[in-house]
Image 1: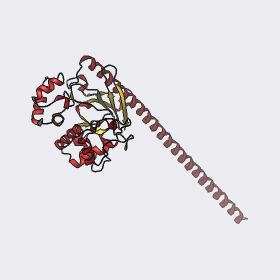
Image 2: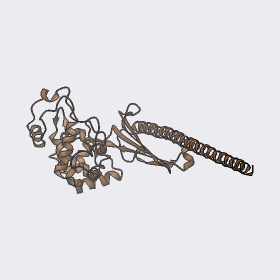
Image 3: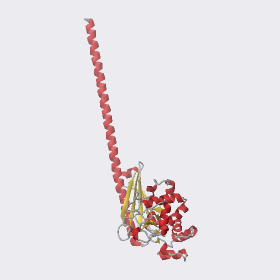
Image 4: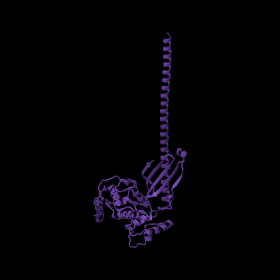
Length: 333
């Protein structure tokens, strides 16, 4: 009988131990589930807060773009020429309001006159390579340390992205200089009706060109742009290097002296004024694509927060009669 009693006590103790273990396992499972739920909830909250910050950042940056449009419109009414002393040429920086302000975020915006640069779209005119503009680009590349081979690679990529859907080349007189230049570059004398490559919008789109790296584009960035249409160079905003490249026979030192006077307030009032100051009587001003105003501007805005940066870049077309039109807009983080 004593042995039976002992066995029963052992069984009860064993059952109690199993119950305790089962309870501990249940508690552990519940704790694990609770931790997982809390983790998911925290992740959801962070995702929601991040999305709210992105939405607010997007609207803040759109507000900067709207302010740039209004500023350019006011400048066009105030002054018919586009000059470096305009209100548009003043970078803006400051704190912001709203949810992102709690992190000490700052907003920076800058407007750039894209006609103060060489426009790669100028390389093609009426379905053919433009020899005069090609010469300008070659001189600019030589001054900025870009090799001839690299310049030709860039030209082939840009020309391949431009089509001649109306067949304008066939409707115009043959151009021996253009045909010879195209043959040198390994391109057809007349552009095809459809582009052979996507049209680049910014210089960074040319990074995939063989032989072109970030250092090459960094040297060209202050002087080169890519616009949807052919344009002139604005002498009131261009650099000395660009003017020296754009005007055949103009020495860089002389270009710098002209622009030093310009930046002291002697702005060019028209094309004739620019030609007179060149003091190059043999130069036909009709052969030089130089102007004194601009219709294309780039607006870059950055919302800088401790967590990340929100970037917006847009191209505006300003016809001087209405609010500038957004041609394209890029956003990134």
